[in-house]
Length: 551
Image (tube, rainbow, N blue to C red):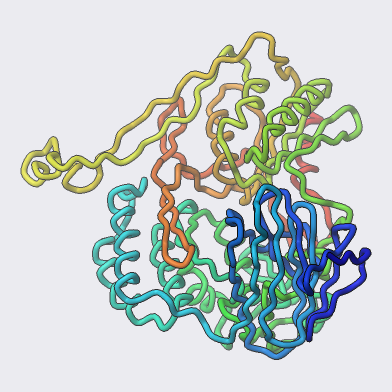
């Protein structure tokens, strides 16, 4: 076995590989070897170890795993492969398949990873499966979707119309594109069909934001500054931009709250479903000139920029030292603590220990700001420790919920007996009352002013947290923008070629009034103008400090 020092390289035909993360690059019989303790491999853009674009796990000893990368263009490609303890950065000059060994601790034999470059779009799903899996999704939605009684269209007719549409799809990507549109008609954030085709996805060299009802360019890649920042978008592909959004983007959006919809629009606009593709962008620049730019998308997998936000030139200043953390505690003047919780997903057994430690430290503050603006959810009960410290009583109510009831005999009688009509109309529900959560007497309660910051990114279990405290008589002031507007228990349906669908099966209710949850409306709404956004100010935090100064 040959060992090469850090940053030395091994060259195989038109391939150049560098160890960028581990101390050594190991090569055996001319084949690079990547070491791992965890049974997992990440594939990421150029030089982006630590920013996993696609995770593959669950390898078996001695397995050969082929990962396809769509490469229709002859150009140099650079990709990072990394594990929990090792990484490999490889530059490819041609389309020759490349392989390396993944040596996982605990597996007797290494896994053979084969990177296969292809110019062909995948077309492996036969028509029989296209109909079957569309029908499977339709059936699960018809019998289990939590909000079926709220649909304002005939879902069976929609399904019938989509049968011919899926049969006319030319490849697997088109098929999943149609499934995504089908599930998006339900307008629920926990209900969606997703295909595993990230390696075919393209990214345009711009990002957008809405301010009011106008769309602006707010970021561009650092080597493609030709679209001036702060340009107002007028047309996309020669169509008025709102017409383009309504026809080409909104059909794929499974959300309904305004800010969440706008955020998803801007997210989808920066991608092309297959690269390379072009986007014609007509903008009005800061000096009132109308200019059209033709943008070309690059591969998400091989792009050295995607998901490395510090290589964007942005309107809003970015702290290049900032890194994502699950939670943190910081201090402002006058003993004001800021508890930032970015997830309620317990990454390991240390999560509740860390959370409890931060909560206990925060109890020494004179005032507290809880920031969950970027908390996309996780496990609902992970928020209980916070609620217990905020609660003024000896107990509080958890979530109440409704879920569908399917009763064959009830449906049979429902077309002529009124008491069974809901079964016949597919509108029968079981209501589960909230449970009381006791607060231990030895818990250090917060007897200080508290405010909570939220946004359209506050979702799922983070919204559960807000639902449980929203009707308290004396609760923290909520500041920001309306939340994501979706929580529940998603049923996961496996689809062909490693795809899946999620279907929301639970309608959450406010525990005291038993009213259905839609979204959390903040007590004080905060929005930005383009200039305010560009200045870098944190208006939500400023408003929180203003409110706390009066308490």
